[in-house]
Image 1 (cartoon, rainbow, N blue to C red):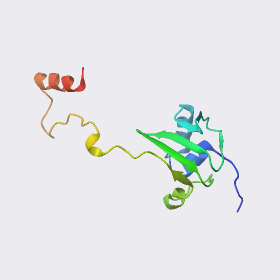
Image 2 (cartoon, rainbow, N blue to C red; image 1 turned 90 degrees about the vertical axis):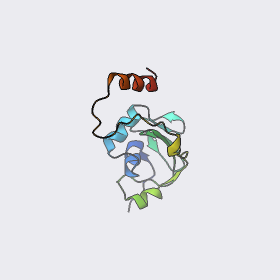
Image 3 (tube, rainbow, N blue to C red; image 1 turned 135 degrees about the horizontal axis):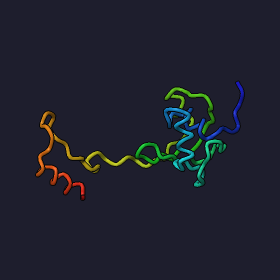
Image 4 (cartoon, rainbow, N blue to C red; image 1 turned 90 degrees about the horizontal axis):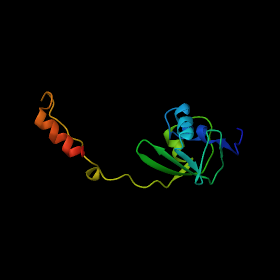
Length: 123
């Protein structure tokens, strides 16, 4: 087996299952959502073991320290061994804002209910 000494950040983040596709990983890099050691990373930026990779995935900030380099997609159990996760814990469920929900089958909101919804949303 060939030992890899450096890997592209888009390939590595895809290989360790941070992003679903390699093109999504590249798009996140181009959009400025991936940083290596505090610097914005282009998709072709190389990572080496010991680098800190910060990536915004969905609504979470993931902070990973590269432990092992892989360029091919691996299983979830192997992927966990390729990085040290230093991500902050996600906020508890009760602290997240609850969106206004209507009962199923209740129909469209009335004009009065619409005003109340707008008032809740701060409009």
